[in-house]
Length: 157
Image 1 (tube, rainbow, N blue to C red):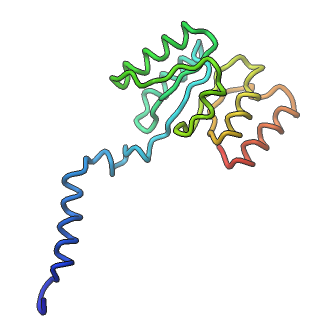
Image 2: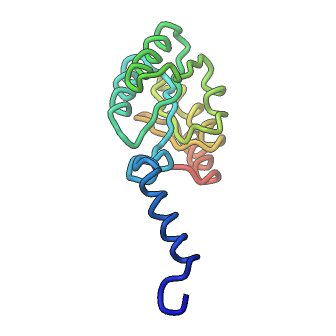
Image 3: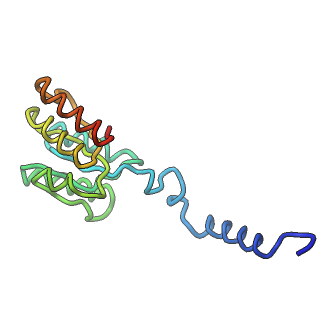
């Protein structure tokens, strides 16, 4: 066109406008899946269960897996997660290593007995996971340095 908008520009604008009307706001908005932290919970008794409840209340976090050596605790935690999201998608693990190697998990919460914190955290960081944990995270300088090195080497938080 000589004195107006070209067909290509018009169609491009129409396509952009249509995308905003056809794609749900949750895909492009603040709660888009790409803005959520996908988490696994390691240790879901006592403090871990409480921490998990806090994460389940966050709109920018999605819990997809629970792990504990106690089958009763994993079953209870899975039910809590599934109830929160209205589905049966949460996976149960009894070995934290199986959870940590999942490619779709961004971060883990660690609430194991204290003497396991450093080992689980180092393993998680080495497999590309960010870590939420509570004190004491390590028992000595050697464990602490190993954990810090794993976090730094893998660009984790």
